[in-house]
Image (tube, rainbow, N blue to C red):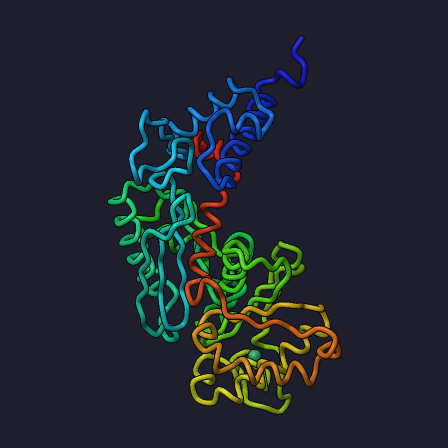
Length: 373
Ligand SMILES: [Zn+2]
């Protein structure tokens, strides 16, 4: 009689779990662990670890250096490491005034980065996405020349995105109900590659979380032509009930103020979008401080990360934002809010996008070793 534990389905799920465990053990090691070390750290037998390691090496996920009889100077330590020439993530970003693509290898190293500047406000979505497709094709060709194999692509857009990748609205691009995955599939270089789409501030916040600022709870503020926010609570992105949280650009700072593309008046975006920052940094900083004070009062956020075009403008904005926070946050005297520029700078969204692809392979290597179909 076949028991549950010996059924083929159960065995394949145990194998998938153990493959992930071994890969994560290598990824989280400061040095290059040996097979015996992995056995010790995971509790798996040496024979099991060896079989799993062999599969991960064959699949291009791990690389192993044998101990040399006499290690010469500069020779990497023997043991196992994530393969730098295996699966890779393609990160893409479309924004109002630029397109970007990057390739991240399994170790998290940026291997290629491309940015082109052009105004997309009056460009039909299909045209803008075709241009992005060309940039993606260039990035994929460069990755192939490096011996990398793309595991998928993730695209950051400044708008409200559904779980299936439909962009419901991107006000600053004038997009409404754009089926981005369908349009990207028309790009030959991307056909057959899994593509996900997410809000740019969400992806940037995830990128920042994984880049290791050390803060489990923070608000990531993304300043481009529009303004978005990604809220990370206890190490996880908070998406809201329908995945549309973070639209801080449309928080009202002056109720009778400038008209906004969303139809309301006095939205933060009209005072602290990147063009407004360039025109009047003091006014922009004050508007940011007013909006952020509301967030801090409501959510008790300790750390605010300024990203996108705010990262290079950090020194010009800091004082003005802090003055408003000090004035408006009830607890400001008890515990000041920490402001800091994004570790990943202006590239956070596309790096965060590429990282979601790499992270998916690292979390579930079995799916990479045995592709569906
Ligand atoms: Zn608005």
